[in-house]
Amino acid sequence: MSEARQPIDVAVGVLIRRDAAGNEGQFLLTSRPAGKVYAGYWEFPGGKFEPGETLAQALRRELHEELGITIGAVHPWHEEVFDYPHALVKLHFCKVYDWTGEFEMREQQQMAWQDLPVQVQPVLPGTVPVLRWFAAERGHPGPLDIGNTPAEVPKTGA
View 1 (spheres, rainbow, N blue to C red):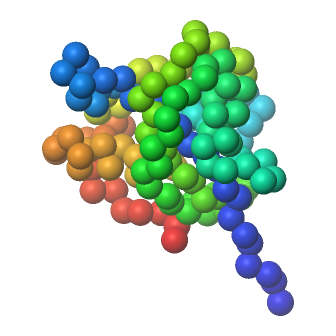
View 2 (tube, rainbow, N blue to C red; view 1 turned 90 degrees about the vertical axis):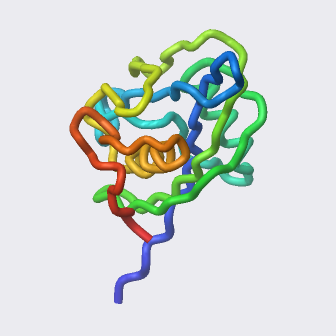
């Protein structure tokens, strides 16, 4: 009898620029570095929780390690479970509006500030629900990305 896989908790930072009026604007996507599963795919940055870490602690550590920035307040937003071929992951998406420091791509990844529809390709499957949530919040009726993923993309996982 096989045992059910336990999901790996992953803290995900949805960094958002605010416009002059304080409205949510562009969001940051980064590419997965060479040597990692799904290398070259675009995603929101973050990583696995270490033992004993809270969501905020994991996100602060991961964004500092990957991007060289120190984030301000962490705003938990949504959670999704994805069953990828290599792992079952529980993604804890958090909005982040404030950070200090200069962006350094410490894993030789790329970064791009984006709006809907997203211009970078390919997009990691775990990123699509976030684009769908942005579309709902922002009243965006069109495609989510230039690959024409529709705003009504079905959920993946449990």
